Amino acid sequence: MIRMKGKIPFEAILVIVSRQKPMILPSEGYQYSMVLKVTRRDFENWVDVIEKQSDMKAELVVPPLFEVKPLFNEGTGEPFMARLFLAPLDMQQGIMGPDTKKPFDEHWSGCIYPALEMRKAMLAIMDLVDKHKKALEKKSIVRKKGNQIHLTEKIDNPLRSQVAQLLEMASHVLDHIPGVMKFLGVEMSFYAEKESRFLKGLEKAQRERPELGDYLLRWRPKVMAIDEQFRQMRYSAWHLPNIEYTQDGNGFVMKELKIDNLPVAEYAERVFSDITIGLEELIMYALQGQTKGSLMIDEIPRASRDPRNPQRFKRNIKGMGAPWELKWSGKGFYES
Image (cartoon, rainbow, N blue to C red; front, top):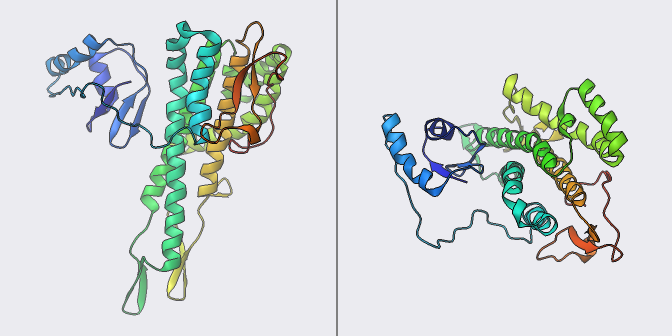
């Protein structure tokens, strides 16, 4: 991964220095690339290439040796970090060996990094709405001017921005799932196709992998509704409207904004949950198919999970447990 700081789109720089077109993720003032095939020497020459082929000035910033800087604030006690950020990497190496680590990481990064940004957007949405409601209840953002009262703070713009980020990152995750599944030997690119092509692909899947076909029949409508909301935002100019308020005595009450008939904070939670539960279960299903001999993937009961690292799955030996099977339960990520 390469991090860039600046107002120029990272894609414009990559056009100059590389023919690669990785996905770019914005985060906290920086732009991060997905995994690039570039050597250290190539990277260090980018400054000269940029300055020779454009009128821009560039600077290579080399961090101190052994600098340790946390990219995320949460540890493995958070189920998302344990089950999606760490577990698939550990499981893949344990099942397939270190020789396949690099290509797997390249495919998996296209799913996990957008999922991290999606979760960050979900938390920001929940926090914005919760704090705004509390401020309205306490009337800390209500001011009186003459005979009129008004609000000194609104959250329309940041809320709209986070909803856009949520949907954008959700779409990135959904776009990259077929790639990592194909790398692990499971074809499911048809899942996001139009109905007629989906049904054709589903027919084949139900013959060859009936458990996958049944799962996609349940999961697909949920994530296609999310993708449709993203497409309306991207191509039909849909956006989250401004919050409306009703005066209540000497204060205000906000009218809940809704997406798909859900309050916006609940919608954000549902988007996150529907996508991450599918991502987790599909990747473990594909990895289960890569096991050989007596090795298998087993599910750890919720009550038995380590709260410091609450992973849901583990490698096990056949006869020491029951191989986990892909089945749609209808439960959300945190309930599974």
